[in-house]
Length: 290
Image (cartoon, rainbow, N blue to C red; front, side, top):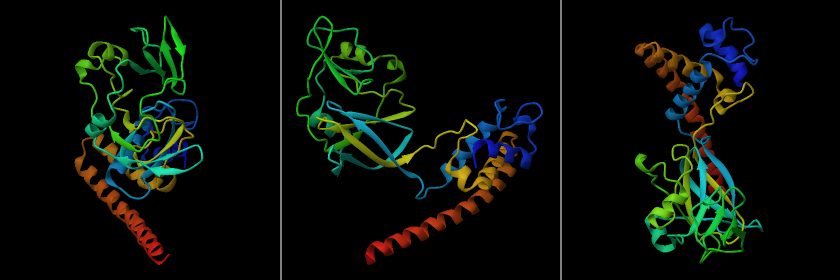
């Protein structure tokens, strides 16, 4: 079921014409709804927070290039494993290390190496700029930015990773990568958007192009277009409908209704979890007998 199909179902089952345009017609068309999508997305969040099973670990794959020592992962909640794949297809699992251990063993990166998607403005001769918007193309400053084959010291095949557990305080949030380096004499390892992305550092820094494979739990993608779908829209649309009803009751401050709908939701989620427990038992038996 797509979002457009579910919008129609939600209107038919609840009669909430106020969540759509004036006459409730053409739900799948170009006319914007008046709050239905907000309720549908909040219902997704309700279900995601109340269940944890095998559908939640997902793959995320991203290429990293020579001189890279970080990767950004959007909507990441938790990391299970990270693998690195070289150009020959060989795959190796990275070892998780403490962030401070990584800093002591491999960082700081030289203070005049800039990582940004635009050319640094405060520069001196010999500064290095790694353009994160152009496959980490590398430049050296000599009256202007000149392409170079510079490589970070001790670069090689990455072996370790660590999550960066901090971002700037609100008071320093306006500092850019370049101004932080100029002010404090070292590079700032910071998020593009700390509320949307998590960043990991890898070491040694890559000396070639690799692919990172991240297995973890990620926040679901919000639905917006009428053609969008999701796990809950496709697999359990009527459970999502119950979650929408719980959200609506909360908006009306009917907390008895909220508790009742959540009770119905939890009963269904128990059955879903039981299915996945059966699958895990079957998988373990297969592995043991194989």
